[in-house]
Length: 548
Image (cartoon, rainbow, N blue to C red; front, top):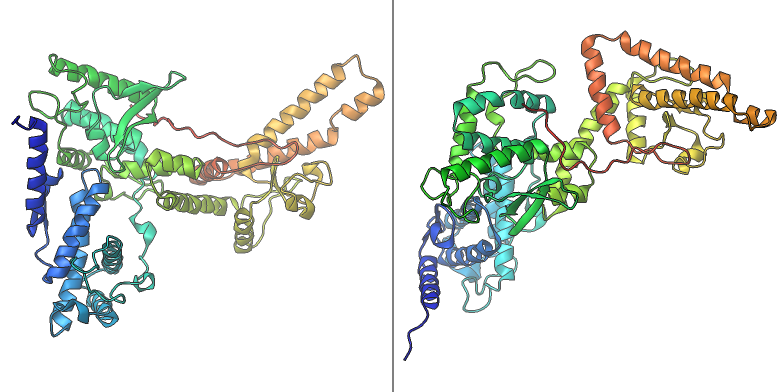
C-alpha cells in the first residue's frame, strides 16, 4: 500500500493540532497563525465557555491582520463579565442553562451601571461590554449553538441583549485621532531628526505611514516589489489589505513617496543580494534572509523616541502645545482619511481608499469634516458684503443659524457669492429671473471666500470690453448689446477693492484665521446653475505632503 503524500500528512497533522488546541481553555494563538494567548478560564460556566470558544473559532476565519488576538480578548473579557454576574446573582451560579432568562440579563446590565457609578469602569467600557456581549450571543445563536447537543442547547430565547439595552457610546468623536494640518506639517519638518536617530529601514516605515495612511501591519508586510504604475504611468503602491483579506490593492502615491520606496528597494537588495526578489520584504528585520518583516513594536518604540527627542514643542495654530503622547503610528491613517474627507472626496471613494467594509466607518471622517466646515462658516459670518461692497453687520448668531440651515438644505451658490432670491433658490440656482446680474441685485451677498471668482469675473468683463470695442464686423447696435456695462465694471471693481481693504485692516492673526476658513469652505463648495462656474473636484488620491 503506497504512503500518503507528504502534503496530506502535514495537513492532517495541522488539523489534529488545531483540534487539540481548541479543546484547551488557554489557546496558543500561534497555532491559528496569530500572536499571543487567548484565555477562557475567567468564564466559569462550561456551556458559556464552550460556546465562546466555538464562536471564537468561527470569528477567526474572517479576521486578518495583527490585532486579531486583541479583538477576541476584548470579547472574551466582556463575556467573562456576564459569567461573573451569573455567578454572583444566581444561586445555581448560572450552571443550569434552562433556568436562565431576561432577569439575568437585567442583573448584568444593572451591575455594569453600578460599576460605572462607582468609577470602577468608564461609560465607554460599559457601552463596549454590552455591545460585545450582544454581538457574541447573537452570533452563537446564528451558528446554531442553541440546538440540542450543542453548548448552548436549551438556552431560553429571552437570554440575550436587545439593541436598546446597549448604552449610547459616549463622545464618539473624542476618539478621533486625526492630526491637525499644522501639527502634521511640523512633524514632517522634523523627519530629518528621525532619519539621524534610528536605522534607515525604521525611518522609511514611519515616513510611509505618514505618506500613505496604510495600517502599520500593511506597511510592515510590503513586498519588495510593491512599487507599480497605473495605466497613465503614475506611481501606485501595491499592498495587501490584511484585515479584509484583499490582496494586491493599488493605492496612488506621489513621486516623493515612490522615490522613498525605490531607495529602500535598492538598500534591501544590497543587504540581501542573493535573495529572490519575489520572496523579499521591503522592510526586513535584521536577520539573514530578508524574508521576515520587522516587528510592529519596533515602529512604536522608534516613533515614541522620535517624538520625545523633538527639540521644540509642537504647537497648534493658536499657540498652545500639542500633547505628543496622543500621537501613535495609527494616527497617520486617521489623518490621511481626514485630509481626503476635508478635500471633498466622495464617501465611496474614501471608503475604497481606507478599505472600509461599512460606509458608517468612513462617515465618521465626514462628520468631523462637517464640524470644520461649520467652524469655517462661523468665522466668515462677520466678513460678508452686499452688492455695493458694504460690510454687513448683523446679529451673528441669527446669521450663523441661517447660514448652516442653507448649507444643510443644499445652499445655492451663485458665481460670486450666495443668492436668496426665492425662485432661484427653489430651482437650485438655475432660474435667476434677472439673468444672473448678481452685483446689481439685493438678493446677492458675498464674502472673502468668493474673492477669486469676483476677480476672475472682473477680468472677463475687461477682456470682453476690449474684444467688442476692437471688433470690426459688428454693427453699432450689436456692439452696444454685447458691450459690458461700465456701471457693472465699476461696481465689481469697487466690490473687489472693499473686500481687499477689509482684509488688509485685519491683524496678521485674524488674516491667517480667515485664510484657513476660506480654504476649508472652498474645498467643499459646489456651484451649480446656468452660467455658473463649477468647482467640482476630482479626488486627488495622491495629494502630496509638504515634507523634506
